[in-house]
Image 1 (cartoon, helix red, strand yellow):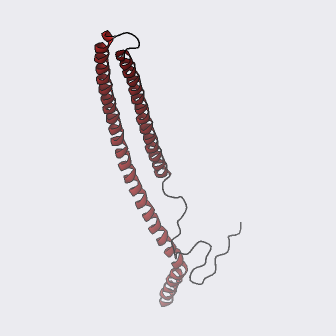
Image 2 (tube, one colour):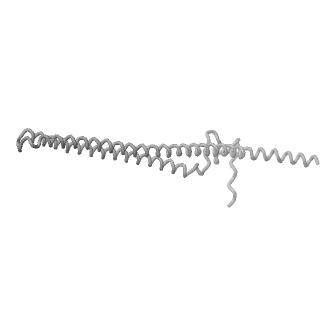
Image 3 (cartoon, rainbow, N blue to C red):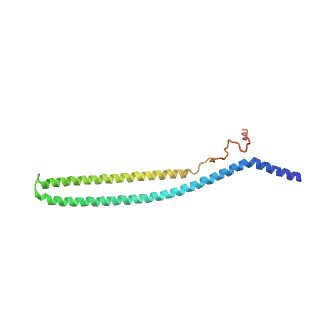
Amino acid sequence: MTDTNQARELAKRAGRVALGPVTTRLDLLRRDMEILFAKHAELAASLEQAVAANQRLEAYFDRYREEVAVQLGGIAGDVRDTVASLLEELAPEGGPGSTGEALRLRIEHAMLHAEAMGAETRRAVERDLADLRSSTRLTQSLVERALAAGPPAGPATVAGAPTDDAPTDGATAPAAPPG
């Protein structure tokens, strides 16, 4: 029986020597996969934060646009009321060519200019908001795609880890199976 025990012990040692590089490689790959899954979880958490931030920005943009519209509407209304009252005061003063008529025309011109500037400001704010929304959505889409792709399919190589084509421990690479 001692021969059997010795043979069994010898077979175990031979198996450990032969499979040592394989188990080392498997341990390295297992560690790499754990790192990749941890990074994937971090990206998922970052995406959730980005989505929440995007929603807050959207709400802020909507409130900002409404506030700007209300403020511009209020300013335009005030200017219109002021110009209308000035025009009423100047109208009975004289006919064409009078100082009152010239002042009235200048005020009307200023009013039109102010309305045009207000409209241009509104358009610029809308463009800026649209650009920012577009950039935010693009960023969100890219992060979602990266997360949907998941970790890389192939095994990752670690610095110092043996590669599939490099023999380990000075052993020769196994021959390809006959096929």
